[in-house]
Image (tube, rainbow, N blue to C red; front, side, top):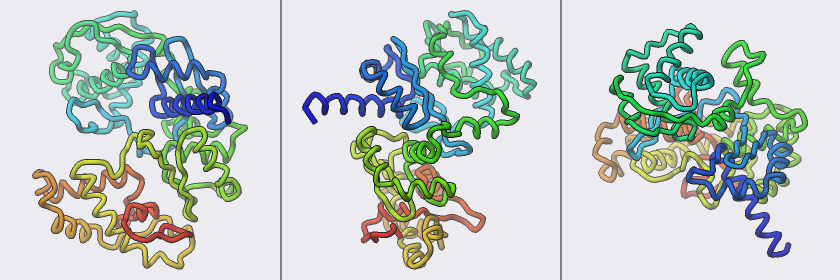
Length: 389
């Protein structure tokens, strides 16, 4: 490969990674350089996304939108409320999502510039049309609407010209002059409502692979969107395809997305050597993540011996014998190094569970918890060729 070919491949890889991490790129946003690369390699990227992932890519002079389909009934990557602190913000609840959708509906019938109270009036009308029990005069519902507006400002759909939109969550009299970017508004909604009789129907329809992609597209999406791939989460057709093509997939992900694929009998783990292509860093920094790593080492070690000799399907998720016991050991050994707030062990327990479940390494069961086989890669111990446990 010539130096020119190497540069082209690197640019295309950078552009795809930017789209996967930020599906809406704008010319006036912080990733304007990425948009330039997307525009430069538009035809290649549109073909790659369509044929390789079943995704539609729209590229315009000042905006690019990758319509990712999602993984169906998967709540592991919620939309989060924006915060001015270093925290990630609380996840949206169903009411927050509903108000976000109603705000989008209201904006389609608003002028290009309006005051905040005009927009709130339009949202009230949309709430009434939808027949929802939402009262924007209450603090809780007003804060949910403020969170929705914050998301739209971050996406550049709304631009605050004057005022103090941030005050609206706690002060209903707060005023702001807003611009509506219609060219971005029309690109937000990724799936149509036709034929959907329930939220579950809509999620299922949005997650369907393209007709041409089948198992290839479905598996590849899983690796890119939720990098811990478990064979137990695949259909029989997908397992059969994966067993024949996993080495080829490792090359595809490396060449096109810059990801390294760790292959194991239980599935695979997609890793970004640059530690950029993710919305959740693990282990990451901070007391909760450090404590979560220590707990994970102990519960993974305890699950290792019972898993030896078990069938592959039984090795993917292993029951956790004593989660609270492992946490108690971590507190006893490392408690002094954690932040003061974690003197409250119940709070530490809640945050550790959130970190591990969000990372796809722990799940709740009827009997307590189960730990994923991929957890063993984070323990400083010898792993096995055929499996992580």
